[in-house]
Image (tube, rainbow, N blue to C red; front, top):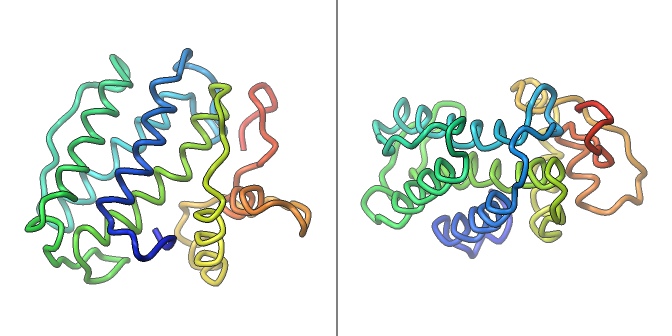
Length: 196
């Protein structure tokens, strides 16, 4: 994550994941349609709890503890996963270990988690909140920092396949709207409109 460079990765994860946890606990309908095409609310948790363990295993030989199934209990799955990531980041030896994280290059485990994963949690909170009718306002300073960091890498980010086509919005739209549009979300999406 590129915002608030003075904030250590462990503290940033604690804050971002804490906001996401509040949203997870507030979900009443886990099969509600979510903004990413073909997803429902539980798929947001499935994605976040699913990709990081493999990433850490492949690039850093780190095994996160296994969690329950998101199909059985998405709240418990998220809380267990979140706590495991926080424990990793709070462990100085594990967090400062240097590894070659493939496309990200050589860096500490904490920096890799911060850049790739904590940013993902921040962005996907909007998906889960919007899908389930909760407060979907993101931290605007973080939105501005992420957008400033991502815009120069537009072509590379699109080529990665992790972002959809940029959605057109007004030049004077607020920074959250512009960030969501940049990553391929329709900022005005509501359940029943179809997915973006």
